[in-house]
Image (cartoon, rainbow, N blue to C red; front, side, top):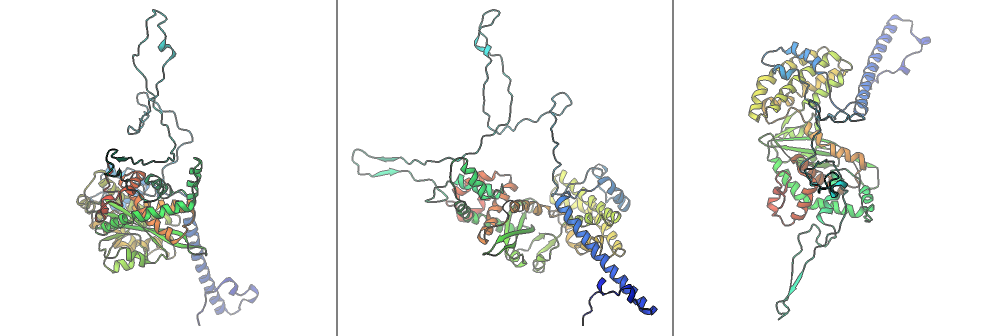
Length: 532
């Protein structure tokens, strides 16, 4: 029979304490065990509470005091070959990809244009200019002194940024008819209609692109699009917009599949996931997951971004998506990917996840946590140096072997010694265990110059679905969740490639039906060339 752990209610009252010293000693031992257990439970609950508070109301950035941490790193590592040069060491650490910008002041100071002052940046030159000429009243009058006509001797131009609201319009494709009025034997000639996403539909590619970009790039709920159209006295139904999104997803699905195939042929894929509530049937919202994949090519450049909806959160879905892949998968230490690693995929870890564990441990163990963060900061300093120099993967690998490897070895030497002295239930022990278990994945970047030291790229790309999830709460059906995959994939890839998502969507929707199906990869944002 299993013996349950004692609770306060199991202990005797003061009046019922035993007189026997041996029984009292046993009772004290049991009480101490209970206190130790409850102290561990309280410590764990407080740790989780601090993490929740930090996530919801605290700073998003993993920001640490760089100069203070460098004291630990310099004393433990030394200033030899393991260190980067002094100019790099004293600079602020590279911010995490999850950092948010500093808030703007309530009132911006007026820009100064004098020598040594901050000059106002010119407005972008690519924007169209609307020239409005203002003539002084004296321009049409003769000179009051001599009576001669005034002439223009120059002008002063003041530029201000203006905005013209987007507007709906009706496009009329006029096909002129021609026929011979003499013999009338040749029949009537009429021009062909240009390709359209909907053969018999009344919505052009530009309108469909507006709906797609508004929903999946700007994260607006569909009812807001209905309200925007209504301000222009255009009545739209949400069901119509849903059908339009389904049409666009179907047209673009082949491009997404071509992006996936090219990604699977590459050497590295970054991945992460987040929750995505979806309504299934008439019950409450189902806790689905949406996973992002970011491809990397041989030159360490990011290629495509593809999303995958996972209705159950089980690893079988990612295994099917990555079927046949034998490259390196950069992810956190989640067990959902273990089957992929057993099947031959190489595991690469995330140094930002490791850093986050030690940041969470700073409250309970500030000194040892700061030591670990100092080591990690020095590793990021090396990466910053490589990024500034625009190094190739081979050059970056050589720098890591020379500068980062001694830091990593010193870090794990300290971890091996420290984990023997900490309380097993503490936050520091959890950080040390994660670092120990993830040693091989987290140090994989030392052997491959194409790898990043962290998985922040995939975490950053999940911000779009997370923002959309906050705005429209749940996904209406499993079919709508599958549209997430295709439309979020192409729009995120547009952002990665520096392509205007509206221009890409409008152009590709008009071309995809007539484009060769075996060359759909040419329409991917990375390779897209707009028509002249």
